[in-house]
Length: 366
Image (cartoon, rainbow, N blue to C red; front, top):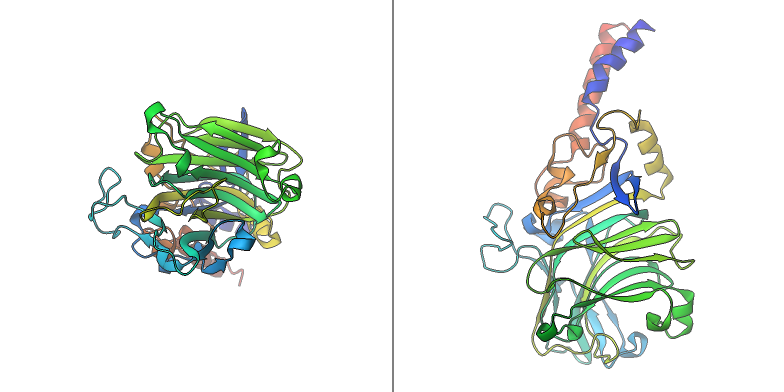
């Protein structure tokens, strides 16, 4: 018994901060989530090596897409604009382009299809969470830029930005907030006439700079934000109940009722980062959490997520991934994933093993 107590005493200090999750305040209540995905696209040199995201390549016909044109999703339409060792200042890479992942819609058609872009999270076990994306939206009319959570066409949470709706003369910049539902499916997947469609208006020009767009997904409720300012809340039976994944898109199919276009010049929406804090639907991930979370009330066991606001954008460049010992047993993957720092789990578990074996040997346990 003495040996076990001594072993626990020696090993316990190397366990991670945030071992019981990451918290934020939603509708006045503190909500904690067990898992994270953080990707700093502004310091990722090659999106092809990233292990947290999957670039999509597929075609959609105009008939299926309910547009004047089909869509051709291609991996070449997603490019990172900065070398991680180069200097980034005021959101600009060394080539003068916004630093981050470019989602491109091309103006030149391929047959009857518009070349477009989509990238999906590799994790498909995301059930409830707080999802944030730093984005600078295109100012080219005729596309739809989107940040959303998806399981299927009737379980989907969307933030969609239609560039044809922007009006700089009266500073009108809407964002379409949508819970796709069976009701929308029955109406030809047109959610605009359903109770879970809201057109909100941004208090800034989304094409002029990066801003953080956020979705908080809880059982029975979804909240939408821009720079932590609440845009809308939806409490509905249409709130999804199944695990899904995150999606970033820019597309056009010529449908005058939605995307418009195609654009008359190449259109670029840039994503500087994605930060997702969530619960996993996987039994193994839940077991991992139970093993590492010893005391959720202990100091540092649950870490508060810094909030980016209109007057404080510093948290946008802050990542748990880059801190020491804050992502234990999380799916961050160093330069292949977030862009810079090696996974804390990769460091901690070998240390745990060495201490466990050495102390056990000295105490005669083995």
